[in-house]
Length: 152
Image (cartoon, rainbow, N blue to C red; front, side, top):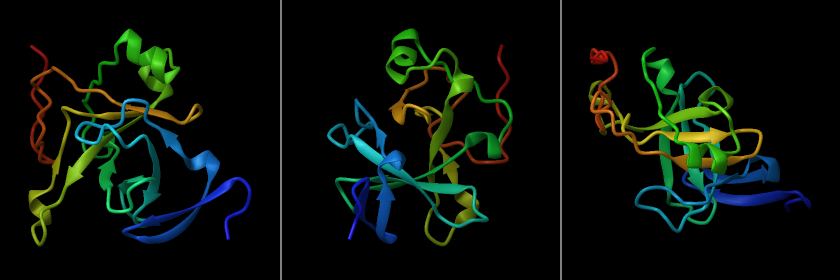
């Protein structure tokens, strides 16, 4: 049974008891999932760079995500003024940046990161946004290890 400041959440990884401070609010939802507003991050394994961004309202909706800087050093996320206000941050350094990850079954060498739609989270305020990027250097299907185009 969950305590006062906890929730019991069903996920594809099993049932979890989640403290309220681990709930992330996404006021605009995510692209393709605009009606999903509450998520949490679940560590896949202690030795893994991957997390699951798990919907709290839909147990079958969990997106594999990772810190893009674990795979590449040059990645500039542009966060507009309105998005910074909504997140409650003054600069990108006050937030965690995540990207969705696709790992085809049985073909981990074909893993891709979606660099064109990063998820930005203010960990202190527990607010997140998916912020589409317009820079063509950052594709929706970036293969880790692939050269990142430099700014012109």
